[in-house]
Image (cartoon, rainbow, N blue to C red; front, side, top):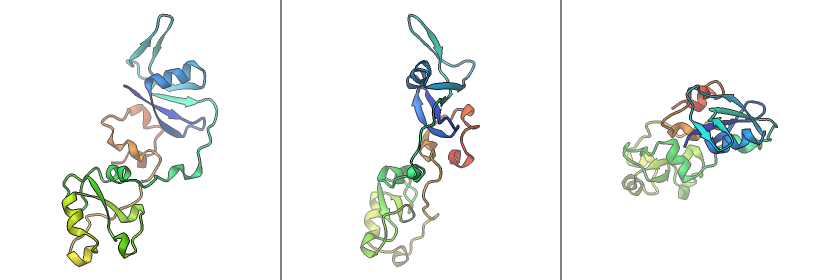
Length: 171
């Protein structure tokens, strides 16, 4: 199903919604269409025909909690940030590993957690990288922007680029 970018009344991006949800918001007069393609798909009912928008904006401002910009640390989030690639060998990763093990005082935070394959996670164990002669190709960092989770999408609508920051679309 099509995805539609939902903007706050202040034009800041909030989330992606389904085309059906977007049409319901517009028809209930809770949102306005900001952008749509000329050849966009259409929803039809016995009484109405509606074009699927690409971007909609809420009519009333929705307060977003201050911490919403900080991505919550989770296994799924770490794997998404590292694109399911092991930080040690580059193969498919299915676990996460603490660079400085928690048993050695390492913290459970974005800058200390990387995606790892089971083999390298077991090989590393609770040792430091210096102890086994390994190096990380890049330092782990916390994801930037509210929309970092959308990098996995195969298609990002060109009409969204005016409303998304460059850091949100960076791969």
